[in-house]
Length: 137
Image (cartoon, rainbow, N blue to C red; front, side):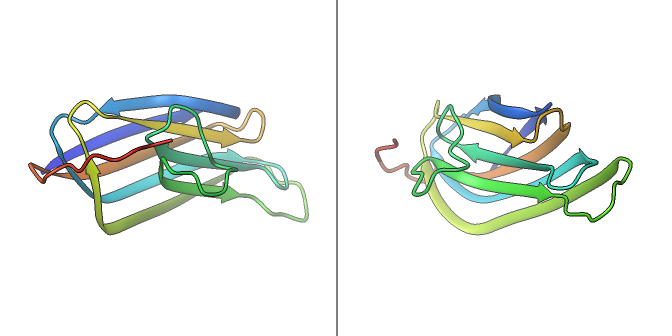
């Protein structure tokens, strides 16, 4: 089994392919786990992270064929605050997503302007499993 890590640093706005990795061996993605923190200090500020086979994000797109994983944080408050650090953890398991050696996986961020956020995502791949051919859009 191989474990891959993406560190995705965001500084606000739409940021595509902030981090990427190449799969080393044919196999299957069996689990994905991630943590994300953001410095949210105003009502309705938010930060979203997406892990995808696509080189640009599809966070606001329905039926995105390349998206693998997503996390999001949003601040809702009634009075002004000063620097609320928010964090979220998320994971999915029991997956069987075929990947081929050399295939690239990207990390994207979409956040309110000037919101600093960072995600750390771990991708667990069972090496040596047969990788099926498939079409990504």
